[in-house]
Amino acid sequence: MTKLAFIFRHAPYGTANTREGLDALLAATAFCAEEDIAVFFLDDGVLNLQKHQQAEIVLQKDTASALKLLDLYDIEQRYVCADSLQQFQLNPADFVLDCDVLSRQALLQILQQSEKILTF
Image (tube, rainbow, N blue to C red; front, side, top):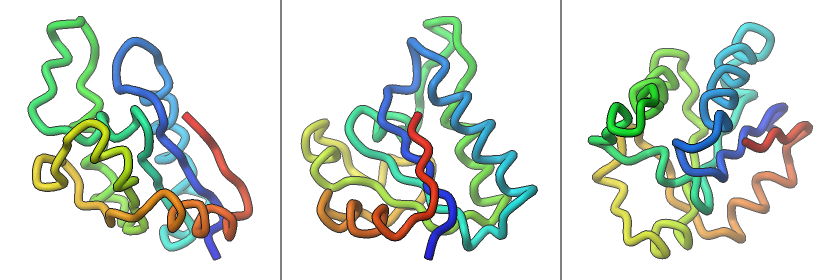
């Protein structure tokens, strides 16, 4: 069972949601074992995973490169919503991070097993 689930539902730029979520996620690794943390990308949150983001154009920090830290921190439970990918016509091969692609229903089943859910 996952103790902490982090859901990214917002686009990478325009708000501080993604940056704050990543900060909280990385801080959680100091208090939880890596296998107790799961990360979910759905709705507009799947846009965080795209390679070749041009954050400098909107005068923002690149969040896609920060997501690569999940590999460094050994956070392996990473899921992306297949329905959201279809909505944005995205391909997992174009992501900065490997994630398991699951239907929204399968994602919800995993989320129901989590003790705490944080949404960004």
